Amino acid sequence: PKMVEIPDFSKKDYRTAEKELTDLGLNYKIEEEFHETVVTGLVTRTEPAAGKKVKPESSVVVYKSKGPELKLVKVPDLVGRTRSEALK
Image (tube, rainbow, N blue to C red; front, top):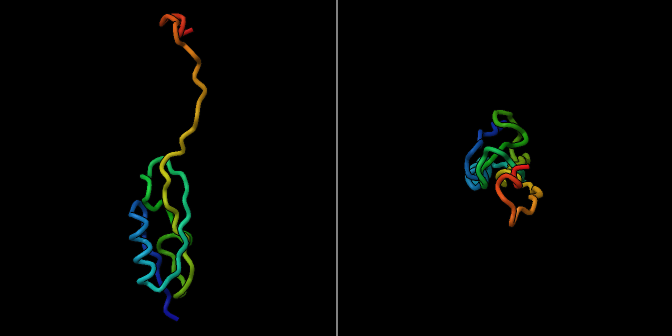
């Protein structure tokens, strides 16, 4: 059978990847992951990777960015303290 090359969807909207993969006769699954530099909703990577050749109807996992992971940090209560007290 004719092999299909996985396009490079890096930093493209995940809906573009969905449409193009469907047009190429490939199946896909969308997974979300945090990414420090890729904006929410854009593709971070695919498995198999861009440029790999697969058989028609193969499955491709498209990873969609959730943006950077927000981490909670504990902030001390500095209400009523002077600047110099707060900096200690």
